[in-house]
Length: 253
Image (cartoon, rainbow, N blue to C red):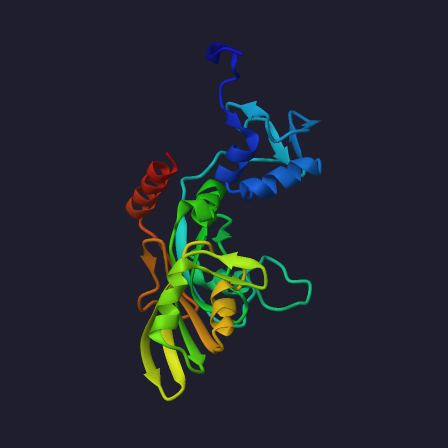
């Protein structure tokens, strides 16, 4: 097929993600489940290319035009699940966000996750494409944590993590770790990772014989937790969001 014969536009999954319906991967699952239609006809493949979202419905509801990309920083407290709904009835971040976000804020999706017992910086966006780009290990976006851990470890052991480590068959890539300070047998350790695998920081420190008793994410990419009060949210200035998007686009090339 020549360039001129190709349909004009973009894949529907990408457009729906950008419109904040869900991440691209989630949109693809929705299409497979028959939840997405164009002009009343159920869509069969996420590879469909369209110029815009006119006539597109999800669960029978029309999809509006994509809003400008917005990103919020939220200081997640411990005790909250990073999900919209928890079948066990535990409180989620969205219960706290109802009071923390300004009225009229669009539907937001978390960028990455923090487990129930981890606190700190959680980014949220209405743009599924940006969410995906920031989560992909190939984007090399650093996540920085401060961990308070009980036990004994040396700076040499922490520095060895720069080569990565394999635990129970799972390989964790480069980890930049430094001892911040020690009080008795408790120490604060600063760790920077780029993969963000499930419970990565906790698993690695436990592998070193440490017991993590507090874990705080203090940075994600160029954004820092700073002195943001626990349970509050602030919007990232648009100029910083666009700067980040351009940086991700350059690194993808």
